[in-house]
Length: 170
Image (cartoon, rainbow, N blue to C red; front, side, top):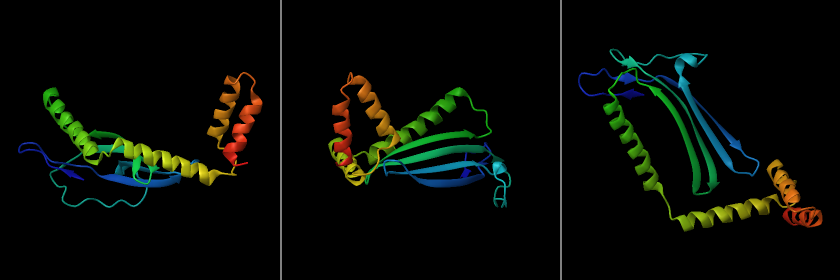
């Protein structure tokens, strides 16, 4: 990736190795992890970038985690570290960071959907997961939840056992 700066400041390039993994979580939802590190951390065949003469090599690494909530909604966690190899006055850095935050907020707003519609989709997706799991053993998180319910229930174990049976479809 190349970053062009205003006249008088050398342009930067970021040479990164990117990898990803798709995972299916206990509840059946999908999660995608995309990670990147500098090519200097990559062990393997390295191809140098052309057109970087006169540019300064920056450093960038990070991870993106995209977790499916429903067919049309997700949670996106983005963690990024970048060293552009340039000492800038605090005022200029504040302006640049404010621009990045504005971009993130505008992107979020652009893709924002009606809250009631998203809530409805989330409830329907949860119901579908529960329907698919009917007759299957409980996940470790569900077992922990029932254990806490039993502790809170002051010994009303029979009722909790009934809840388990209903959840399992029995």
